[in-house]
Length: 252
Image (cartoon, rainbow, N blue to C red; front, side, top):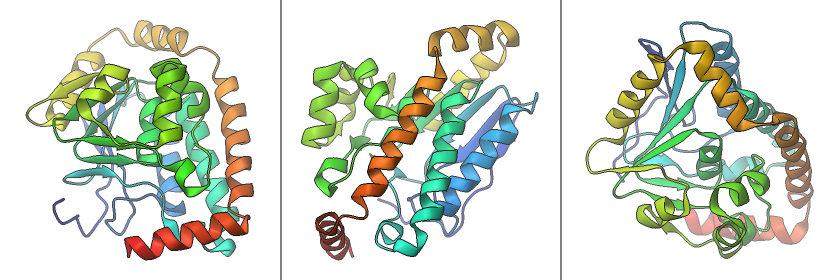
């Protein structure tokens, strides 16, 4: 992976497309409580901004997102703020009324992968990979993926992906339905082109059609709350904490 940027790019409005970078504010390809809060605020503002018709999520150069910040998992003093920020962000994403596209270039791990299940289109470069190692960590999936993953991947595909925790290459991810389009060149350029196509559509018809396809978002929000409750309980379990500490040491 290329060296990550030393800063977090601010959301950028290009025409009617808002480009949002998924990373921490100090330039790491992870999400901490501050990044979750920032994303929630960005989506809230975009939802009521008529100039924004489509949102494109991107990662840093060579890596979409490596998941949550392990240091916050291991610090009980940060759990309350972390849980609140995660809940707000995913509730905002689940109820967001406008199309969301993702361009994946590199690894999408943990929350960096589950966020993709809320996207209407996922465009990935040839070398991209996808992994959700929650069970390996002693945790449960987040972001209502216990509903969205079986819907998108089928039960058997979702079970294998989440419970085995294997890494999916981009071809397998497309075959399962997680990725909609594989590109040989720039995933971001392709995503922006798709976004421009969508932005040209009649706004009301596009948003109404998307809303009909998405269905009842209250169900997703209830599941987000339940998953987060189980996640929080797991972070209080001694065996889980020891496992997370061991993984953090190996990753250091």
